[in-house]
Length: 354
Image 1 (cartoon, one colour):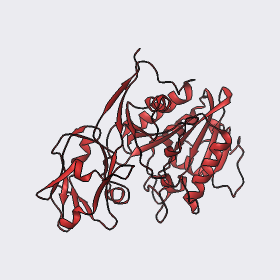
Image 2 (cartoon, rainbow, N blue to C red; image 1 turned 90 degrees about the vertical axis):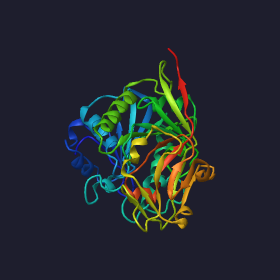
Image 3 (cartoon, rainbow, N blue to C red; image 1 turned 45 degrees about the vertical axis):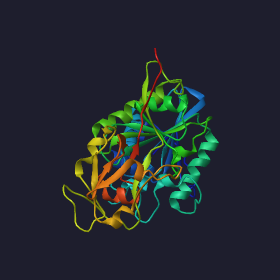
């Protein structure tokens, strides 16, 4: 390919500067093969004195962000400021079948590696990404994801202020404010460099692809993305808990309890994603008395809300109060390695009147 310079071979992130729009392949798989691994693509903007960043494909099975970015790169559209485009999990996305794996078998989740140690392949990629942020000093960063289940788009921030809210509002009106510390990129947000996560919806949902692209174009075209626009309304959800199963637990998705399984979840639980799950909402069947001890619902501060927000009636796990549930997954591997869902009890409405 012509029109770019690359970093040295030992660099875990390949740097591609000012690529020609016509140099990119038309299909996503060939585009990812062109990158050859984790990459930073630098697109010059009209104002070269400033830059902002976008990251996508931290998880190899979440395609909406990279589809939006691929479409933008091929369009030749000039952003208002220089744009840093980070695409870390290229090898994961290409492994075995396109967009099949969240992370490579035997490796850590790439979006759990943004704190030490950095002593493995995904850790080195994360460390280099952070170094490049310090080198280029973008004014902000948006990290684009798909949810592992169906549901509407929402943003996630580790710090709550108008700058973070403004970035999320480019994509969605739902905002989760979390104190969970998992080693995710957005946890490294700070006032002078706000970082937000945007979950565009399910990986197989065309609406998620549209939300990712339209939000990205607002991000590259708006001169002042850190000011919350008048007339914007946001719904905020604070300090969610993760409903998790302990290591070695078993899980099934079925319309009736599966014998010998710690938790059987009805396949239609996803219908509650960002809807209100009223008191008494059925979450699933517990397999035994011991299964209860394998569940937790911890917040970022380490408080287990399981007894407060859920109860067990005749082997059925149900809610004790109205909850907002989100990121409900029907993927067994993700539910066991990460969590089944997030829950928060309250909603705050924030708006900027015109």
